[in-house]
Length: 347
Ligand SMILES: [Zn+2]
Image (cartoon, rainbow, N blue to C red; front, side):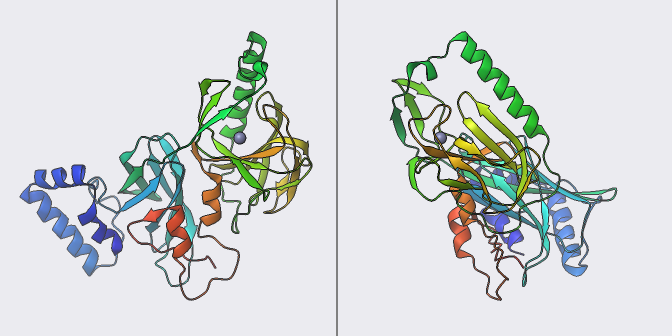
């Protein structure tokens, strides 16, 4: 397995130090385990010791990117769940022609995650049995722009009433997003909701009326007022709002902790609870909320991580029938799975 090979390339710090600390006994145990797995093609569950950190493979990505992690797993299990930086990542069963069967997790790297090596701990549950896996995720720093914006004073220097409103709205979103579909609702490849000029770049450090503000957690796409906005993939409309900052906005739940958001709309054409299909028109471009002009603010949250929505377009999921040749190239831009699980178009 390529996962095994990746042990050698695991992070220079923890990996090397950990290896030195290993006793002869530990080595014997590990050798024994490796031999066992090579002789008997069985999955080791409850009897397996906790794995050394990063021993199951290594992945890398930049701040704001999505890393596709695949856990090879022959038979179906009850649950596969990962944890990275206190964020829980549910994995889903994914069949791909010509590949070892397994479970896939979309791991979002938040735009403000600390660069460095972090552990993705994965738990595989099969009934009462539990198996632990450990991957390293190398987070690389992204270079974000600085954007200077001039906005109406009352949208930057909030009075008490505006602050109270904003806090209430934040809470409303938080509560609505706690609930998320336990199953994967998206199926096909992702679509761009509006094609236009990208006027506000994801992650930009924002200076409004000369004051530093939070980084831009989405992508702004400039388009004429009234341009149709499509949902990026299948899902359920979890919340529609008319908020102080985001204006008229839609939150689409795609399942397994994956949300897409569409803000500053002039019109919302769906209601809470509606099922939507990839490419379906859900609203129209506007300039509601805090906006300098008509544009769509497109945002994505993956299990709490704010990621660049444009990385979705590069994800290796496609509605087209899988070809026999795996296409690994688009995945490279979205993430770099060093353990080289080339993920091709799904069947
Ligand atoms: Zn924006």
